[in-house]
Image (cartoon, rainbow, N blue to C red):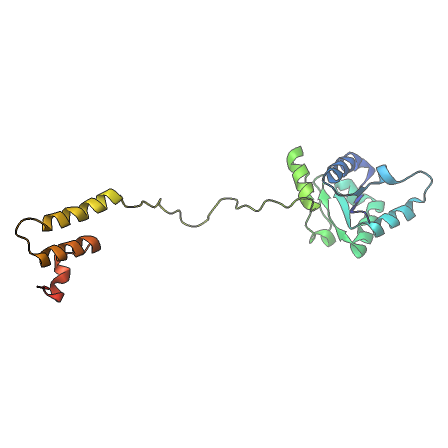
Amino acid sequence: MDDIFVSYTEEDSDWATWIGEVVEAAGRTCVLQEWDSLPGRNFVLWIDEQLSRARWVMPLYSPAYFTSKWCTTEWTSAMARTELLPVMVKSCTVPAVLSAITYANISAADEGTARDNLIYAVRAQPRPRRSRAGFPGRKSQPRQDPDEKAVVGTRWTRIAGALAVGTTLPEVRKAAIAAVTHADDDDFDDFGDAD
């Protein structure tokens, strides 16, 4: 089974061969009339075989593609048999019956973008999953951690002040607990002195 049968008009054969080259370089097999249809074979039978063998049919959307009776036969037949993997190579109006099928649009892309879009389309490489603009919610302010030296220094200053000459042991204990827990002396009034 071939991976992809490229359905295109003669007018778009440059696109078809470029796409075939990109697809095969990405590790997929690709069948193109220009490369694979040998002289002396019945062309209608050959197309029927390719449509039956392909995992995907890749119609190359262009104005010429949708006016071609052969191409119309190919894409309508392919819809009943297999999965379409359309690529728009020239800006055009897509028939209503195909409008629900997502296509890769490379009609206005530069070569690198077109190549990437094709490789993603043929599932040879997953598309990077990234947010377009980052987190869409409210931006937070940078978090600032407290200055440890300042916090510890303030606690030791309170404890050292309580150790002054003439301070009782319960007062030192109360000051030390208050310094460690950030509590004020008033917070201990409910418990009474422990002397």
